[in-house]
Length: 253
Length: 324
Image (cartoon, rainbow over all chains, first blue to last red; front, side, top):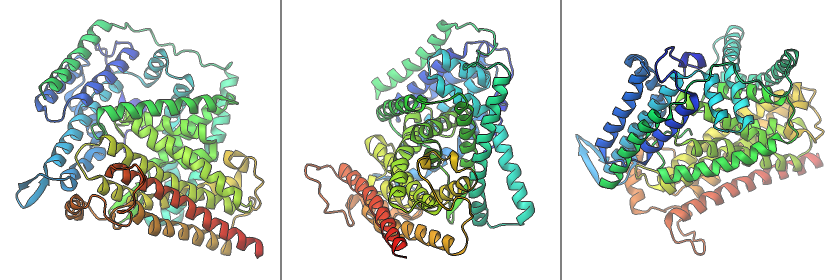
């Protein structure tokens, strides 16, 4: 997994999608994913239509195709197991060369690949056009629990620090202990995990003290990002298009 | 364990989403009780650490690797409520920003990876620790057993969701067999890592371990060596082997649920003729007619047996420790 750099997810720009309030984009993403999931597997045309609707958003966001496809490819390791489904599913079977593939399994694999690709595409548009603090502020404005967004905020802020710290520890292990087998390395890293928790705790204490030193009084003031226009009308039209496709697919299936 | 979009149907995704939201809401309310300011950055940094640890794969079989799920470790260190919240945050951030786990499968993944593991690991850890002599080694053994059971419980939760609304038509017996088999092995890795990590924290800062906050543990100031380590490793291995040997065949209609995908082709057609074969084939729960429900019931019984065996072994070792 590369891409732990949360800010590397963002694609700098001033497109209409970039300049849309983050809570609107979050709602649009979830609504689009809901339409994707509700669409019956065998209505292949509907997935084409949904892909076109997603492409409209990518176009409006002025994201280069290469950038979008590269970010989309992060889903690959997670959906590759879908390719096993034609082999483990039940009959009826279809002969492809010398292989006997399960027909429900093939539809299942198609279902996962199509729906995961479209859903990840929607989340890529959100994270490419919205800075991470802005996404968290959007969740706050949507009345997500404050404790949840506060923890997520600290997590994303310190992700890079912790990941690179773990990387340095692995380098140190390699330098001092030579080439360990993966099993030996796993055993060493397990006790490192404990040490890292203690460091995380102490880091948490230091961060808190630093916050107090800067005038923290129990709540974090809202980020000084300019309020962006909500522009619900256009977004609702975009969501409605995906829902019309899903409804049509359900009715014709 | 991270389920992508499209793997579980819309109705089941929504239903599990309601369960996840409810469980997370209850966890948040309980975690907020007695919460002090500095706990929030701590929880955030711990979430970042669990995210980092989940990136490290450990080998379980040639060709199969697992990664730490962290639910048990988070629950033991931070308590079940904050543990569940922290792992939920990890799962949500992974889905939103890193495409690890689907957006629509958020409910499924939060339930299986965060809520079920934390809520199963905590009582198991506390229960096992209660009956063992109060030493650091006992806490590590309790961590190992609770992490193992929590991973199996998470995989059973997935099988239940797949039975309710999984796509692809894989026979539920095959899914249960493969999930149980592989997660029994991943659970051993999770157990060893959780126990070792906890042992390190107990040796350096025992005050940070919520799960042992009210227990005076001896031996925390020394690093266990020689016989103590051997005893711990052998006990842990015995528990793990006993669980795999005795539980996997009960939970799985096919005792050998570890085949590769290719081998499962023949396996699957066999499963079609005998959707429920194997030791629990004749197991009938009064009023349970459906094969699917029967399979799930046997899965739950498997979990209970796993827990009982774990408790039995630690009880025996406690008696021996006393007479010694």
